Structures are given as C-alpha cells and as structure tokens.
Image 1 (tube, chains in turn brown, yellow):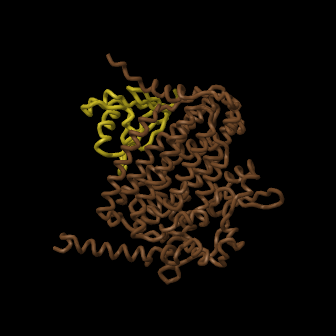
Image 2: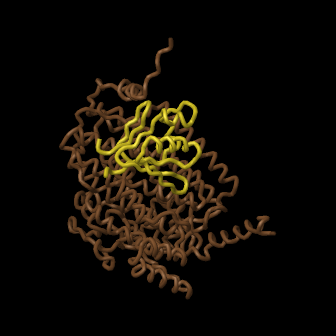
Image 3: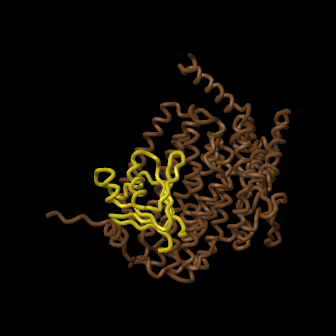
Length: 509
Length: 90
C-alpha cells in the first residue's frame, strides 16, 4: 500500500527544519554576522513558522499559474488595443507615477529581501525571504511588461530608470526604500513586510487597482491583483516577524515599537502620492482617499494594532495626525505637483466641474472653502492663457523628501515646518513625525541626498533653470512635462477617440 | 464588537465557489464589492473550509489554490490541509 502523503504542516517542517544545519567549520555568528547587532534577541529560531506553510513546490506551482493567467490577459489587452478603452488619457499620469516611482521599488525590494534572507540564521525566515525576493523581481518584471504597451502610445515613460536617480519627486519613494535597506535585516523586514505591506499597501493594491479596473485598464488591474496576492504572503510574513520578535524576548518590545512608529509614518507619507493618484488621476472614481484611509487604516490597521496590544505594542506615534490630514492631504499634494509640473514626467491639470462636485460631496465644507476656490482660481489663470507654473524647485523634507507643503495638524491655513539642528547645520522637516525620525538617527539623515539642493549646486549636468534640469532628466518640455490640456497625449487621445467612434457601425448609422 | 478580519479575492468565476463557501460558513460575514474584487469582512474570525469549497466546486480543492485568486487579507492566519482561519485576539 502506498505511504500516505505528508500533511501541509509536515511538509513545511521538512523544508524549514530538516534541510538546515549548524555550521561547524566556522562559528554561526561569523556566518550570520548581521542578525544580532540591531539588539533583537532570538532564543529559538524554530519557533518561526509561515502561517501559509508554503513549500517551494507549491510556491512554483501557484506562481506559474498566476503568471499564465496574467500574461494571457496582457496579450489580449495588447492585441485588442486596450489603450483605447481606458476612461481618459489623464489616467496615464497615474501609470507614469507607478512606473517611475513604484516599479523601481519592487526591484530594490527584490535585492533587499535577498540580503535579509542571507542574513537570518533561521531557515523558516530564510525561506520566506527567498520567496519574497523572487516575488518582488516578478512584480518589477510584470509591471514593466504591462506598461511597455502604453509606452508605445504615450509620453513620459521612455526613461524611467535614468529618471529614478535624478528626478526630485522620485527621491520620495527612492529614499524610503534606501532608508529601509540600509538598516539591519530585522528592521528591513519590519519596515517593508509589516509597516509598508501589512499596514499600508492595501491602499495601493486594493482601492487604487480597483480604480484601475473601473477606468478600463485591464493590464494594471491584472498585474496589480496578481502582485497583491503575493503581498498577502508578505503581509503574513510581516506580521509573523513582528510577533516572532515580540514573543522571543521582552527586550525586543521597545525596539520593535520604535520601528513601528518610524515606518508607519514613513509609509503614510509615501502613500500621500497614492492618495493623490486615487483622488485626482483616476477620471472615474471608486472611493476617495479619506474613505480608503478610514477602511484600510482606521478599521483594518487599527484592528491589527489592537491585536498586538497583548505584547505591549501601542498604536504608532502620530497616527492621529494622519487622521486629521485625511481631509486635505491629496488636495495639498495635487496643487504642489500642479505647480512644479515643468519638472515632472507626467501631466497635471485642474479637475473638471463634475470632479469638483465629487470632491465637494466627499470632502465637504473644508474642500469648498479651502481648496475649491484655489482650483477655480488656477483654472481662471489657465483660461486667460496664464497657466501657473512655479519654475523653481521646492524645499523638501530631510526625511521623507516630500516638499514642505503640509499644514499644521490643527490648522489647515498654516504651513507646517520643523527645523532640526545637527552639528551646527539646520535641516527642515515637514512634520513632527519626520522630525522624530530625524532626531532618533540624525547621523543617518544628514547624509540624505536632497535633489533640489544638488540641482542648485550645479550637480544636475550644470542645469541653471528648471527647463534645463528637465532636459537632463530626458524629459521633453510640454511633451513629457507640463499641462495635460493641449499636450500631445491629449491631442492623440482625442484623435484616436474620434477615429475609434467613426469606425463604429452604431455611430455611422 | 470584535475587530473585523477580512479576506479579499478577485471577482472572477474561479473565485466564486470560494466566495459562496465563505459566506455560508461565516454567518457574520459581509460582502463588499468594488470593481474587479470582493472584500469579505467578518467580526473576529473567518474560516475557509476545504470541504465547503469542494462541495461548491464539485472537485477536489487544495486550500493553497486560493493564492491564485487571493488579493489581500487582514488577521492572524493559520492554515492546515482542511481550514484557512483568519482571527484577531486568539
């Protein structure tokens, strides 16, 4: 009689226990030199378990199935000229931010998890990091494949890798990941798998990708959901690593709490870009940033922190500031992007009347009194042929690298600026959250490369104004940059829609 | 009331038997649909039972097949051959 198949738990145990060994030629501490210096104390690595208990054979099987499904849809999208069926070409600005800002992060995450996986001496943690490292490479590749189709028809997507290390606004996501992967392996996994993926990426991959579906972008929808199914594993790994550290030793609790405080705030700041994509760049709306924040943070995120309360973990510092900012975050961010549009590889515009009404409905009186009049004023300038551009570069926060444009938590009419001093030099932060992060590790953040400062020092190919700087980014003026209305992307879109409709028998009848 | 756990799946025919089984097996579960996906919220605890999905599908089902159509989840996860459980406060 055939031997009974091993159960899931036994298969996982065989992979993560039976294949591992203690080194004898060299001491374990020298083979794994990085998993102790952060101060995290691990008593028993075997207490680590992936709750999904995914083994390598199952991993390859399901990942290849996901890839087959994804590429079938991408092929169909491309063969059927799917780019003509999106809601409006303004939507492409969101795709451009994703390609320029998010896709490179996937690749950096791939490297980061490869490094973390090498650093951990526990086999369970190593296997989980290995899978995640491969996942992240897959995400970078599938996103590039999906977006390459749009690159044939729209501007601004031709040189994202060159821009990544040079564009002032792309240093926001770039600095986030460089901060994470220059930390130790436990902090890296806490920052990316837990704080970023568990707590925050649902906001990108759920409401935004659902929005992509609603706007007819089947390519993004499909890789988005396909990637997020991997994220479910990463989130589970993130929660597991946090619980593991908290259960292993009580001395780990304050270290983990400090990381959660830091990475909640850094992740939240980064998501301001995603909120702005949702509110302003999706021509057809699914839900607003404020609603998404209420569901995915105030309901689901806080539930997670309640659960960690039994280990002595409290809600992350400054989470209440995020709650106050939810009414205004995206409006402040959009106006900032709008004014610096001559140094962006995407288009900006003033929302139409229908969209302004949607904002009024979602954001109420604060929008009507504070932001709508400003948008209407900017529209008036544009109609007079005086479209407003701020042709300088902004002062950005020393930590999150977002322009210092946020307002005081309790006063939306006063700019929020925090000045910190270290070794006789003053640095500017956008918020108490970023100031706290700076003050905890000043030696790290004084080294941050701040693009606008570099540009003014002549480090951007000697550019002396914003147009020369954009050219150094390989961005063509008023083609890749600037206002949407009247841009080549806009004109092509109108022409394609006209021909598309003319070819339809219903319209001809 | 207990904090809610959630399971989000792609809204496609492959996921439908899983969605139906989860809604039947978890009386407190609420289905929230947005374009392209469904999010099932449930107070405290949510279970996906292999046997229930198999009954809907009419064939054998490995719970790990859920990865193909899974979008996201919230809650402490525990999975074995028969059940995938999400819970808070256990």
